[in-house]
Length: 120
Image (cartoon, one colour):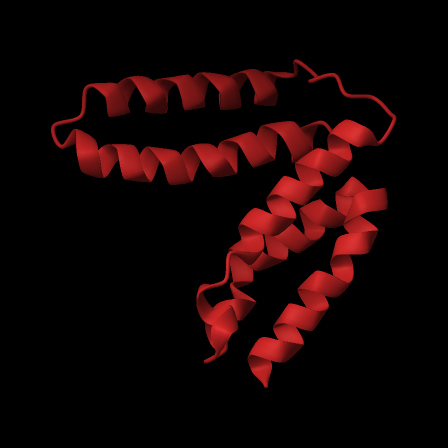
């Protein structure tokens, strides 16, 4: 039952994300931080809700008209520098296979943060 409720809430928000990408940021953040699908015991436990909302948010952001310029504030510059530093340290890691898996997960969050949260 929980799987169905979580799925209905998330898929019910998808049409709103298509027209207003900032709602996608809210839903993506809620899924990423709270992990409501992990509280269910059915099919929703391993369903990629965050990926679906993240991709749809980025697509909606590209389609919707508005300001799409990355503001070069000190915080943005520090985030980009930090992402570059993580990439460099992953390149020279002792165990590169394990480090690359973690790097992929972190870079997904960094891209979503840079592209969506800062620009929206």
